[in-house]
Amino acid sequence: MNWENKIISEEQNQTARFAKAMSHPIRLYVLDLLAKQTCCYSGDLSEILPIAKSTLSQHLKELKNAGLIQGEIEPPKVKYCLNRDNWKLAQKLFNNFLR
Amino acid sequence: MNWENKIISEEQNQTARFAKAMSHPIRLYVLDLLAKQTCCYSGDLSEILPIAKSTLSQHLKELKNAGLIQGEIEPPKVKYCLNRDNWKLAQKLFNNFLR
DNA sequence: AATTTTATTCGTAATTTTGCGAACTAAATT
DNA sequence: AATTTAGTTCGCAAAATTACGAATAAAATT
Image (cartoon, rainbow over all chains, first blue to last red; front, side, top):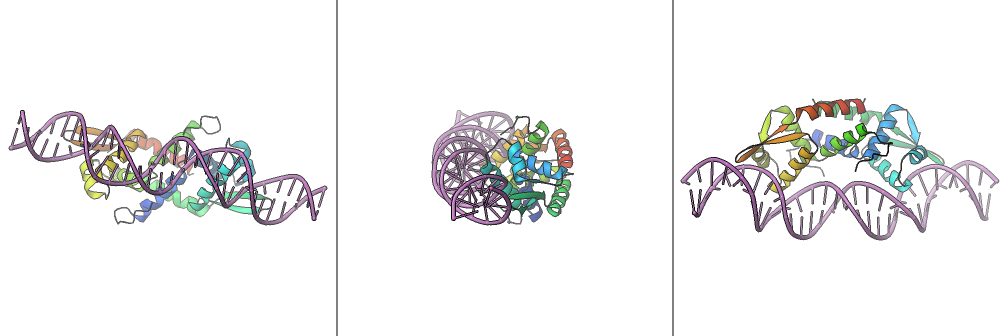
């Protein structure tokens, strides 16, 4: 869903992509948590959130695809952290957009 | 899609709702336009945007349902404007969230 | 009264999203 | 070598989203 028809700018497309990643309460919760602390394990999230592990995995994958988080393998666990660069980019884009 | 399971706060749910409204390039474009000028007619948007009028109507309806815009009937046209109160709320929520 | 203008709603189809449990992977432990 | 632990991927179903054209609505103009 990338309107490159010169009507919608690349900046707008990127903002929409970030918004989409944030548009599900579970994903927003995960981002919120990661923004407030350093990192967390997938298992910690799985204990808190009332969804199947496979569903959580999918949401984490979407956040990764959107570039907002990254996962480091610490066998047998996976530690997730914010992607700080893209988080800053999101700040910038939404700040501009909502001005 | 409103997780009122005390795990996800009402603030987070509201932020996710706004994000969802912003998650489509066409809707983002409309919001961007309305934020930069005062108001505009549905017909103006229809001329600019490469989608059917009925599709545009649906997107405008979603933005209205999310509380981000409002339409005033000026027969036979409809003038759309930002809902400034909720726009401010969105600013606040995203500012907090992305901090 | 018939027509024109502007926009919405309806009906429908294609695609995407969301969610689950079962099956699988990969490393660590027994 | 078998088991345990932590997560992901697969296969599937239900629901939501996106999009279109046709039909409709409502006021203004002819």
